[in-house]
Amino acid sequence: MQTPWGEIPVYDAHIHFFSHRFFSTLGEQKGGPPEERSIQAIGTTLGWEMPPEQPERLAARWVEELDRHDVARAALIASVPGDEDSVAAAVLTYPKRFYGYFMLDPGTAHAPARVEKALAGGLLQGICLFPAMHRYSIHDERLQPILELASARPGTIVFVHCGVLTVGVRKKLGLPSLFDLRYSNPADLHAVALRFPAVNFVIPHFGAGYLREALMVCDLCPNVFLDTSSSNGWVRYLEEGADLKRVFSRVLDVAGARRLLFGTDSSFFPHGWHKHVFEMQVRILHELGLGAEDARAILGENLDRFLARSA
Image 1: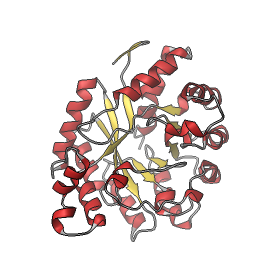
Image 2 (image 1 turned 180 degrees about the vertical axis):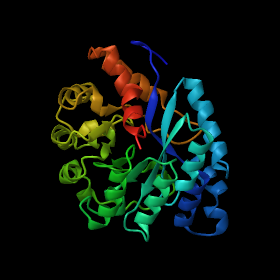
Image 3 (image 1 turned 135 degrees about the vertical axis):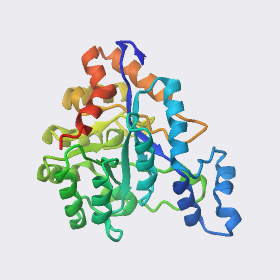
Image 4 (image 1 turned 90 degrees about the vertical axis):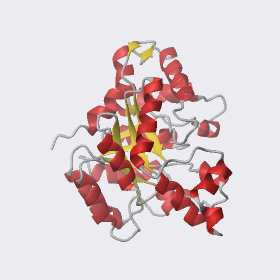
């Protein structure tokens, strides 16, 4: 993609793969008469384009969208537990365009077995944990075998959502979001990251309101990364006068460019890829005087480097 630093391959580290299974799961949670919880009814309520039943066709839609914006590759996140197969199908169909991540609730039955199966297939590389959503501590003993599996397979990352968590689609559908902010502090990841030094951990959205704590963890743990995704509206919680430019400046100063991953948090159609997020972040990085080598790292090389399979 053409940038202020010249032509740079752009890899998006954070796209939600809102599959047919994803919306069907929300419909089941919504309940009510069948006609009100159908995927067609959900599409009408949201005013969104509903995905085809075949995940390969949704993957093709994303390839078309990324091509339109000249995005080389993206990490797709299966955004409800149990939807691993949808993203795996997308990666299998377009292995040079996608990395595969999946959401895991470690409190569900046979969670370690699900992780072992997902990683063994070679198509999924990211385990996404949402402690506040599923109401558990990152120190929960149920995570031990899951982190051991990640540690044993190089090229696997563990994505840990911290900070403020809102799921817009749930709000629009009137679904409750009984999240628990007690489990959202990035500082909780410190001891875990030290215990599993072979695992690369990613905290999205700069910690989503816990910037100070996220930077502490990055400073103390070289295997913790931050992603830049979303509009980062949490910046309003910072001290007066702080903005996203100041956030980037502090992150670059503490963590460095090799620990930062560009992402957008794109998710549904017809909205598609969030070009405005890319343009805003590129403008900020350029204004901060970032060099071309660091720009290449943030916009794609870092993601590709730590997801590379070495075994």
